[in-house]
Every structure is written in structure tokens, then in C-alpha cells.
Image 1 (spheres, one colour):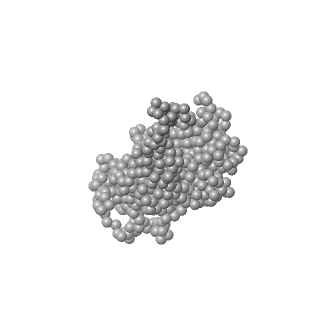
Image 2 (tube, one colour):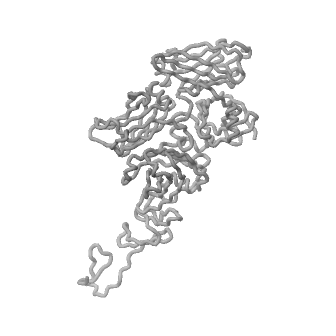
Length: 596
């Protein structure tokens, strides 16, 4: 199929994207002009005009329901899974372009496109900039103009910054050779100039031009950079007021979260505490972090509260880089680092940043090193859940812990991502189950779905074609994730999803969970064909079971075909005079006086 859309772009909307392969999957991330809404879809197009792949990025129902990550960063994130081998070859040969589309499926309002190309500087990118036509520039001369900057730094004895700037549209009609362009990096208020350089473009190209700029900088300059306080300007030396691109320098484009499991540090650790931590950079450059713990020892007094510390794990002495909040709300702690410097960012991107949980009695209660994960599918959800071992877990599972993400995409597929630690090889292979209960109540019916059999500490997968009724229950029922093993009768790890899994409305067809909101409403019984039960007075009863009502005195109930029926107890006739009939306390039926 060939591409069919208009190239008219009156607002000069610009976007910059980053792409990375992992296990035959192509992850993509974009910054888009803030004046534009979220694009409806993305197309991957061959150089001959044929559409290779198209993904829906946004639906009308998505408004206000994007993930915490995409809302917090302003990025557009996604993945093309299982890219065919011939398409991977086209990508390597740089024969594929990407198109972002706005409007309806049948009538595109706007489309912008650009080639996917390799740049060596991307391997060291720490920051990015989306360059757009500056205010008051000549709209007729800047039509289609835009650019991006790949920014890297090095800090140490001498600090420096390197910019790889990819742009087009900064040239007048008579700019044919040796065209000078000015490059400035300065504070947002323009009071502090960090870098100024003049680059000459020997032969301007009509599509892509690349500039390389390097300069020494001070430590204070790097602090401004990491805190999102700098703006980049590239302009024509001959027509600076007419031909100018500008954009703030922000966290790098890549959609990514940083996560770790928290385990007792050292082989001789006696604590059975565990936990997880995850973080990401928001659109202002601050580092948003979340920590959850389990069975963490608590002591009275503020001085004994747990202390969270970020460490550089690459150094021998593992220096402390940042102390986080001491205030836990139950098992949770969260916050942000809004004055983050290069000494935190560089080890974070290098995979050497660790987090430590300690108190005065134990300096290394929990420890974990952050790993980078691309945001897409399961990881594009509200938050991960902590999978915990049971209270009666056998000794070999004393330090077992897990972290899981769960999400439903716009194609109605259920995605899951699981990381484990501390599960001995003797318990493998393992199984991941999704467990659904209509509500938390004694003897509740349980529906289990096997998601996947697996071995190892990492699992990423998906389920296609789930019935709308099952998808609806992800939002309204009580949902657990379980990791099971043939080596133990009880689950190895288990977690309840306290935040409902977002399901696009078109995936459920307007279905609601069949358990009514009021658990005491008449015959509020979920339909579970494999485990028929009745719900009454706060608990479930099996088919054919009879019981004495806890709500109405002297009433007997029974369960028949998922419907409960309650009747007042029938008392046997009495063979005594009326004046001899007595009603004893605690008994439903009267009796004759003097009879046992």
C-alpha cells in the first residue's frame, strides 16, 4: 500500500525520534511540538512509498488516560514487535522513513515524515533538543524547517559538551555553498552564554544537514544543563531574524524507565526484607522515584526511619550521590530530585547507579542496581507491582522477590513483563498466572489463566484475543499475579494489583463486571461457569450448600444455580396448651414448658 496524505503543515509542527532494537523489537520514542496534540498513528514507509507497518498511537478515548510516564514526560512511546528480517535489513540500509499522522483514520489532517538514520553520537546521548522555528521568523522561508540535537557531556577534571545537530530549512535560496550558521547554548533567560560557535556548511542539502560542535564547560554550566535551564539556538549568520531554530535542552528522547529489585545485601544477610524501586525523568528534567518495601524492620523514632541513598556502583568506595526522602507512607516512599547533577545522571545512563535502604541498626538493609527498560506495552502502565513470597515460604525462597508490569494496548492485547530475584534453579521451570476474584470475600470463586511457562529471571510476553468479558474484569475485579512452581504447592510469589489495569473502552464493548458494587445486593452473583457459587451476607457459598443467614434471624438459605434463596425456618407443631408455650432466648422455635 502506498502513502496517501497531505504534506501541508501550516503550524510547522516538528518532531524528533529515537529508535532502538531489542530482541527483534523496534522501540520508538518522540518529542513532538507542544502546540500539537498527540499524533493518531505512526507509519513505517519504504523508500518506494509502500507502508510497511502502521500503529495506532492515540484514540479519542485516550484523553486524560495516558500512562503516568507519557503524561509526565510529554513523550510518545511505542514498539514494533517482531520486525520481519527483510524489514530489519531495510532499516539497516536506511531505506525506511517514519510518518506521524494526525486526524481521523480516513482523513489525515497533518502528516510529518523523516528518514530513520544512524548517528554515532546516539550511543553517548544524555540530553536532546527539538529545534523549531523561532517566534517572528519568516514563515514562508521556514516552512518545513526543524531539527534535533544529540547532546553528550563528560565531567571530571575537565568537563566538556558535544552537540550533534541534525537540521534542515535554515538556508535562503541563494545559500548554495559555504553557508555560515551560528550555534548558541545559553540560559533560558539569555543572561548566561555557555557556548557560541560558527559552523560553515559547505554545500547545504535540501533535506538533512549535520553540524558537530564541542566545547569545554564549567561544572556550574553542567548543572544548568541537567536541570533543563538551557536553550539551543541555530540561526543563519546572514539572516538571523528570518532563519532561526530554537529549542530547550531536555532529558534524552528515549522513552525509558529505570528499575531494580531490592534484596538483602550480601550472602550472609539475615533480613528477609525485599522491595522494588523505579524512576524516570519528567519533562522538567527532575528524577521522579518510587520505592516499595516488604517486611522492612521498623523502629520507633525518626532517627530509626529508613534512609534511601543513591550510590555509584562503578567506584570501589561506592560514593553516596544523593540522599532521598526518609518519610515512608506504609511501605511506600516517593519523591523527585529536581536539582540533579551529572554525577547522578552519568552513572544512571551507564547502568551503574544503585539504591541502598539503610537504618542506624543496619547500613545495608536492601540494595539494588538500576537497569534501563524501554517504555512500551506492559511498562507503559501506571506502576509495577511487587511480588512477595508467602509467610510460610520454605527457607530456599527466603529472599525471593519479583517485579511485574501489566497493561492492555489499543489492539486489546494483554502485555506482561516480569523480573525475578532469589528464586533458586531447583524451582524452575515456573508458571505465571493471572488470578481473578469478583471481590475479596471468604470462599470467593477463583478464575486462573496461565499466561506463560518460563525459566530464568526475566519474562516478557502477551496474550492475544482475550474475551471482552475477561478484559473488563481487569478494571473491576480483584486481580492477582502469581508465580508458581511444580516444586511447591503454594505460590512462589504473589501480588495483588491495587491499581486497576486500564482497558481501552472499545476492547470491552461497554461490558461491566457482573459483580454489583453493593456486595449485599440481591443475587449479586458473578458468572463463573467453572466454579458456580452464590454470594450472600459477605461471603460465597458453593452450589447446593445450605446455611443459616447471618443477616436475618431464624432464616435458612440455600444456593441453587448461582441464585440464593432464603426462607424463614418452619417450626414443628406443638402438642401442649397455649399457656405452656415458651420462647427461649437464642432459639428460633418455641417449645413446651417443662420439655427438654
